[in-house]
Length: 358
Image (cartoon, helix red, strand yellow):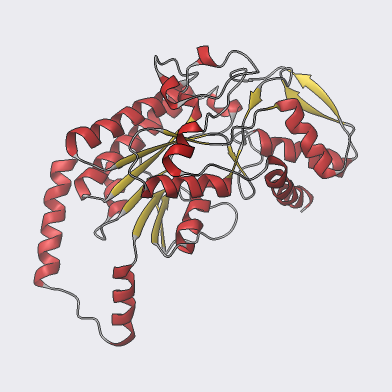
């Protein structure tokens, strides 16, 4: 609670100034201002990233006024946000600028230093440092600025290693996160911030929501460079092999670890549905279809129309198995992700193949 008292004072002063000197809209400008006042206002942090960019477009399609904030612009195309600010949210003064003077009905906190298994297994200090600062500042400012609701995007990485040692793993229930033993620093920080959100709600009355995302994938995301996740990596490898006439691709480990994968359209739909609900505890947002890395690669090959050998090499693999239990989300939201993996991969592969062949 370092920032909140100061922010409340600043916000009080700004409100008084606006009451003494209110704007006097005329003509078309007046219509625009009245229209914007009737819109819900949302702040999306991490709006330059894969899921954040998709969520921004989703909110705009629902009629929101959206401010996007990130340390980078979206890599593929222009953001749909009404405003997009380049800000480093590790710094408290930049977080103040992100919130500004507008007032927000909803804050979607997606900003994070993250990547695929290769990245999060080798950058523990960087991830723990950066994400802790981002989330401490962003959450505290949400309370100080008096936002309506705050949704934190957590991760399936919070679940303990001892529940994920077999490939044929049962779905992970939300209550399975404790006793805690996250796999790495990324999961540990996510779990700590979940607890922080809970206590800001209980102690200070901030309306928080917590989403545990499970392996979101789709087009217009990172597919090379070390931060990409398995679906994008496999699509790139298969597309590159097809282009070059190669006969094989490489997979880390034995290819038997299992995961479930959530289509990005379902993921952002789930985030919005959770934000509108009255449910305040952590909630899985993911598919409950379990698939091995070998089988995931084979699906991509079928989509590409090629038959390649899989060469297994040394590399980080993470836990042996991870799947989402969707019993609670069905009960809470009367909804769950439903896009078939083959459908989502077909669209993802088509986009990545175009990038590879460009």
